[in-house]
Image (tube, rainbow, N blue to C red; front, side, top):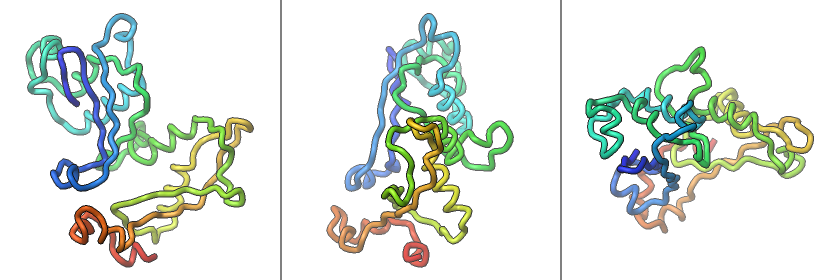
Length: 212
């Protein structure tokens, strides 16, 4: 979160906050700027605001120094990040935010994070592409830089169910489960990368899991 006198910028990156991650690796970034709430926008939180506020509440961090009008609205005193998020109008957000938070989430928070959140969001969307039936050539391609064990069939089933949630826009039926194809860098790709073989140190996967 980057605060400005006129609003806030939300930036989400796939990279870790390490110099070599930014200088020598390919990362994805999503960035959007939001103004302060005014008029009708102050009536209630948007879906994106609820997503973001729920996540920052898990961090237990405080907004100790924030520039311009935001600091004035908070009275100059340290405030929770959730209180800070509530100052901005996120109604024009071009996406929904799916975050991960440590711990076990039960009850009302069972679907608040991770794959459960993704499954819930995708499950209400309608897609024009039709079902993911394997017979129709459908499939799910997942690329990893860290890979645990898929020995437990329930783990793989949960992955497939989460990423394949959604409805066929034409029939209203569930898209169906797709076969998962896991993409892992080859030895040649690591060797020929910017960092060469040392770059392979960021690929976290036991050989027994990768070759399974």
